[in-house]
Image (cartoon, rainbow, N blue to C red; front, side, top):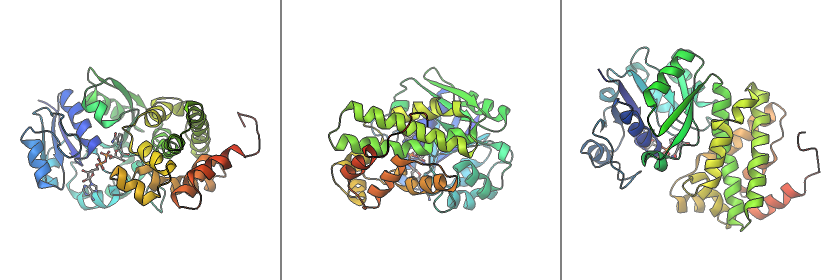
Length: 334
Ligand SMILES: NC(=O)c1ccc[n+]([C@@H]2O[C@H](COP(=O)([O-])OP(=O)(O)OC[C@H]3O[C@@H](n4cnc5c(N)ncnc54)[C@H](O)[C@@H]3O)[C@@H](O)[C@H]2O)c1
């Protein structure tokens, strides 16, 4: 009998990952709020809003009834933005199938509490932490939905859960690795959105590849510093969920964080940039939370600091770049 998977959220990544799960042999029922979108998915028309022009396998259907999506699921995938995770799961906690692993796809920190999404999932559902996994890596939704090759990381405190989730999403094009460092994998995904904004700003200012490579490299160094101070393993940040995801976000015009950064670099404010990109990028919401987290453990993150100042309208992207270049010289490894 094939595996039954519920995917909460019918956005870009939830939909692309539903396709991966179906390609790996699962029957997937997605839950979304928009009846016309769910009807289109179930009628075999793909997801015309978030992934137009890309067909989905017949094993992917969608419903507006969360109980219908969750009933009998062997695995529950959370394809929601971090800003909605707690409220949605709080409402649905009683309907989650007992014992099924819960997999977060979201890359953000909860505003105010600064909790990572796996922590929010545990708090909102009261699930055992061992049941919660996260998936992260260089996985731009559209490329994944086009079945272009990529690798990813499934991290969980329980190796058997990580293995089960990886098995459920392994296809000829999607190669999941397992990991136990949930904290490192999640932080890599959170901070790369903020560094992606900074690289986009450099591009919007007309700077070249040297500037972008310098921000990517220093951004990763600062991310590693924070993650290790919080208890992550340094090697995690050199892996797919750290360097891999950062490079994809910073290189790709498909990334909404990158696109938003470009608009900020061109001089737009954060609302105008969101209007152009037609969405608030996760990095805009996460940047102040990441900075507060870093201050809490005494870690300096100059790139994040400057992104926060630009997002708040305190400095222009050009002034932020100048401030980074004017910092006191130091040892690269310091
Ligand atoms: N897009 C990508 O390429 C990509 C890749 C990897 C990870 N992610 C992460 O995955 C998460 C989801 O990203 P996305 O790109 O799919 O976002 P999206 O904006 O395309 O989709 C989010 C979905 O959640 C739904 N949603 C939002 N609030 C809701 C609520 N209160 N109740 C019910 N549904 C609600 C929206 O209607 C939409 O269907 C984010 O944290 C993102 O950082 C995205």
